[in-house]
Image 1: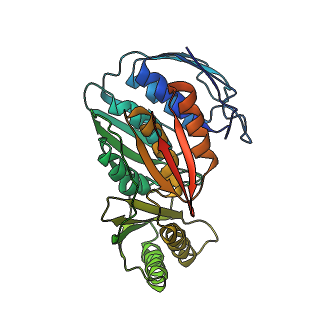
Image 2: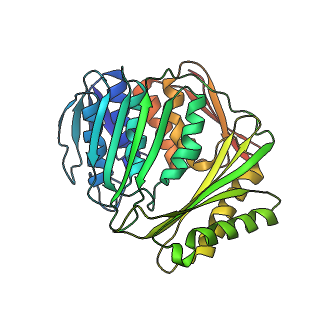
Image 3: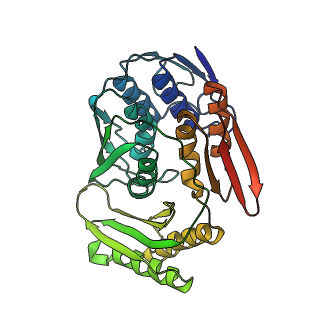
Length: 344
């Protein structure tokens, strides 16, 4: 049985999600203690609870301690079969985080998986937006052999949530990757979304300022404006940008609207975040970097990428993969970037 101290390193929900995924994929039970110990409210919140329950459905797992506020759980997986799985969050808890927790498990299923999540948040604080997953994470993972797509039925924001999305995953064979050259930017694209705010042209204003900001820094762009009317319960907005290079690199950024935050502020924020990334020419942006650690560990062979910062999530995820899978990672500062390599 794996023994994982969830209070180590970042002490966040990421350790919980990755530990459960590794347990399911390796078919080894896991005991996780001190769950989210370094967070203001330790233990399982609704989105963490639903992530574990969804993972359990995917592999017919038995478990103990899977309840709200629990700081300890046992998870004993069975075979990953596939099929259709339903999850309901009931808060503005992050749907993308639930997808990130279950996607690796789905990739190892014997048959295709359809995971439908209702009554959650698609675009919330402290989590990637749903469109970041669609347009940055999934295209990158596709190059690693992961065959998945995400469709949004309802956008959901804080505080009510009520968003809805479906992730479809085909059985996949993970392969190592070497993202060692930034290359030349071929295009910069984006999607600017507002829900029941079209009368104020929120999505368009976000997109216009984002494009103006990118142009000032020498980048031409094309941003789709989406005036959404899918969620009667919660107005909101978000925007995602991504650059694609001729070496297959995707570098992205996202930003959220909010009370007291102008659309122009949101557009400028997301563009400046992308420019900060692009100026250093990484092969993986800061937020994508920690998401890839698990896939690097699972794929046989050498994998490597360059990123501009060494975040606590990257360090925590590497620690966990070395602890659970005996992976070997090397981190080296090269000029203004960090080179992260999994050697075995």
